Length: 131
Image (cartoon, rainbow, N blue to C red; front, side):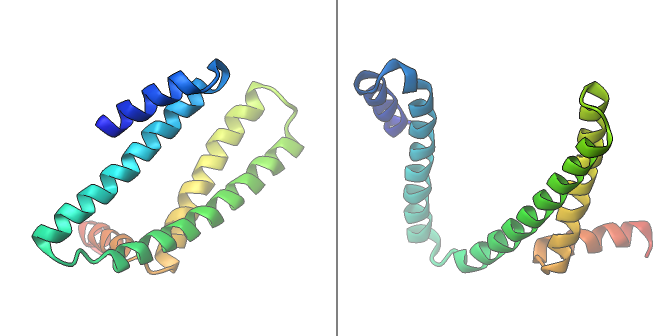
């Protein structure tokens, strides 16, 4: 919190008014990075190795699934814009179909990329459904 206050006040004093809002978001982001580093160092001292390599692998796989899913959802949204005239109906259809495609493609991508946590979750759901 001290880092965030220091950065936010510094940005407010130094930067022009037009960019203060953006700089406050940057200050918040940087304070989270500092908190991440400090938290990591403290946890590493107390607990030892934290297995961040596995975490990074999972994040890369989920990121790849998210990029693929967003591109597919964007394509669906664009296609809908070509079919339906601009207006509220177009926006609603894009939201519904784009969201459905995004969610399904992200889940399928995460399963395809063998993200361990997603596979465990899918297994838990299958066991509850009795399959």
